[in-house]
Image (tube, rainbow, N blue to C red; front, side, top):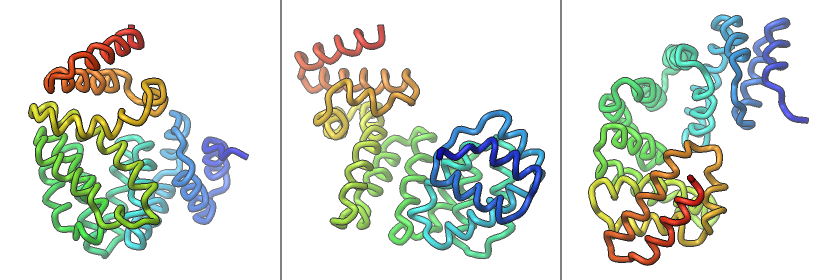
Length: 256
C-alpha cells in the first residue's frame, strides 16, 4: 500500500507521539514524496515538535552512516519550505556534539546564501572517510562559477575508493552517468571541448535519444535542451560536423 503523507500527517496532528512522528519521517526518507501545500501547513501546525524529532534522527543518521544517508536527508529537507528547512537545521545543530556533523550542517545551511563559506566548513571534514562531501563541495564551486574547481571536485568524487569496490560497481556506473551530466557543460564553459566529449559520451554514447530523455523526464526541460545543445557545440568544435548536424535535427524535432 502506497504511503500517504497527508493522511499520516493529519493523524499525527490529531494524536501526536514521538514514535508516530519518527515512523513518518523514516517512511519519507525512503519513499520520495512531493509535499503539498497542505502538508507544509500541517507541519507548521505541529509547531516545532515534528521538525525537532526530524532533527534528532538527522544528526543520529549522519553520525552513524554519513555517506549512505546524507542524500536521503537532502531529498527530505528539499521538500520542506525554506523556513522549515532552516528550523530543522538549527535544531540539528543544537542537538549534535559530533564535530563533523556540526561542520556539515553549518556548511549545508550556508550553501544558498554563502557557498564560499560552505566550502570553509566542508573542508574541515575528512574527504577520504566522508567521500560524499566532495559532491557537496563540487556544487558549491559550480554555484560560484568556479568551473574548473567544480570539475576537479566532481572527478575526485567519482574516483572515491568506495566506488572502485566491485560490490559498488552498479552505484558507480549510475553516479558516472549523472555526474558526467554535470561535468560536461562545465567543461564547455571553459572551452575544453575534447575533455567535455569524454563526459558527454558517458551520458549519451550507450543510450539512444529517447531513453536519454526518459531518464530526465521530471527535470527542467530547458536545462536538458541546454545540455544537448552543448553537446552539439562540442561536436562542432572538435570537427565532428555530421553527427553534430544529425543530433541538432533531433533536438529541433523534439523541442519544436
